[in-house]
Length: 437
Image (cartoon, rainbow, N blue to C red):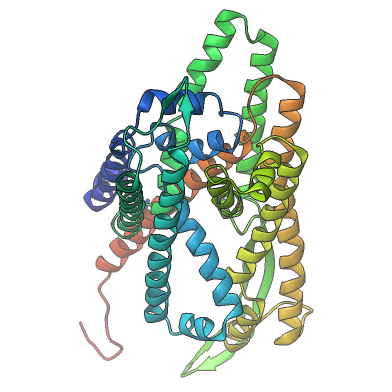
């Protein structure tokens, strides 16, 4: 067997990895570029008092950009929200569904519409945040140096430009780097808080704010969650597929058996990200605009209450089923198997195979949705109930970190494998049937 090429022997792969790291460093530098007209000390005190609310969660996903109120304070969430909207529209509007079926052209058009919607959402959220910032005061000092229309316009344009820049960075990483760019941006934002979190735990142990037993429980919790995530993310259901024999030219083809792998968690880390984006959008507006109904809703969505956990769990389950239905169509898979002469043993080809695949997919998706809900909602809630540590959303963070990391490693392995096959083809001399050479 030909060995898989080493990473050291692939300069193209190193270029991709270096390009990805360089753009992530650019993103991390942008987090520290402040938005004009803001008193950073007042804003820091405000976020210090709201770490246990949705502000703290949003700040986690933005990699600390919201706390510093940098030009990237909105993060990539407007793009994710726009993507959710258009995926829902594609599933419900025949015109967009037909456009998506037109191949690469249709996907480019839908991506273009998504970018336009992202700019509109970022402008709207930027204006609402600017209005709300003018009302924030700490010790009689306003967070805005010079309130007024000028500040609102500058903030709105600056935050929109930052989100557009992040959207462009994500697309560049996806096309010319390694992994999914948008996911890696969220990954790097969450990972940037790990050193500070570890240092905070050691400080609490040192000052006696945390008992050694609590620290041990925290370590066991993290290790257990990591092991569970890796186990489930690598799990899949293998459906046996048999291919009938058929004569093609002078040769007999088919007759072999194969497997159709179906992952337990086919939707990956997207349901928690989508659910967080849906919660953040109205909460961001409600925290800065005096609307009684929205204020009451945000008061319930405090990041640890029963209402918040119920809404968050419901959204995770919904997006798990929705995204799986968008990415995997049992009817199309059954039709492709029929055209290739394949069939599931004991199941008739065609609609019966589609019904069987849909039945299996529904059970797997339910299992995956329960797994995501347990990791992102149930375990953090139980851990918080048993300990004074503010570790809610820890499951979501670990899920994103491990899921994105595994997907990136899988893409690197696929590049190495394709390079291996390319080397085999280059070293093989193809001879024609009538050639005497």
